[in-house]
Image 1 (tube, one colour):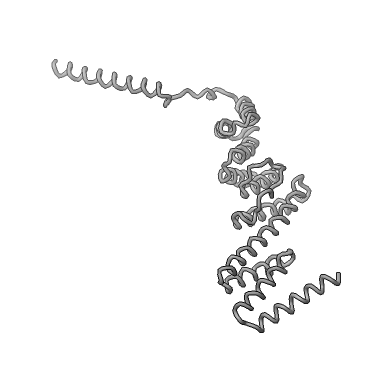
Image 2 (cartoon, one colour):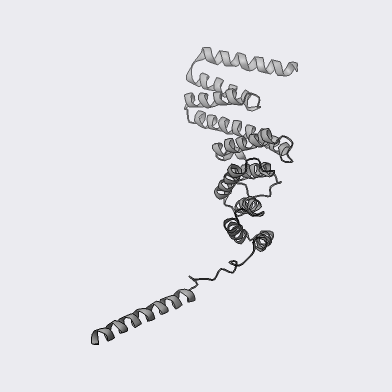
Length: 257
């Protein structure tokens, strides 16, 4: 009898401790009721849009993710993925935006909004925070990650090739041109960096990249002059003379136009 009474007291003590712990967790806000648990797909979508309109991107993302997980085959699911990616971008989560765009494009490669998703992915790749139709190039892209510029160029190229009549295609072509100039400018700045530190061979190699990959840009002439200066500094007079001849030929051709 004493043993039964002891076991009963132990169970009662454990139950009281559990109740106290549950009350403590609830008071601390660890256990919270999900107010959206009974919401319809339409309610979730409308609330997500309202949050986005208020620039509450974190709340919008939460609603979009719940909508997608609870109603994956509903009529709002695809649109929720697109708008969730946009919310990530506006919230400064460029990597998450890119991931969301890639996931959407893999799931729905022929979706009628794929051109927009590609455009958004390019924006996120360049880590822009301005509006989608704003000027990307208020900052100098040549100062940014060159790999990001190449990735953005490839994304825009895919957009133009797959959707040549898209509302984003014209602007994408313009951005591609700007990115080419930016990459050429980046390579030339690296070449100058090496030249100023007397690393002439490295400077020649980077300047040659400009001539080989960006020959149609205005930076190719400057790259030729830099290569000539490097040969002069190295005392390689025959190659210096060859470069001078090429520069003169290019200048004469420009005057003849």
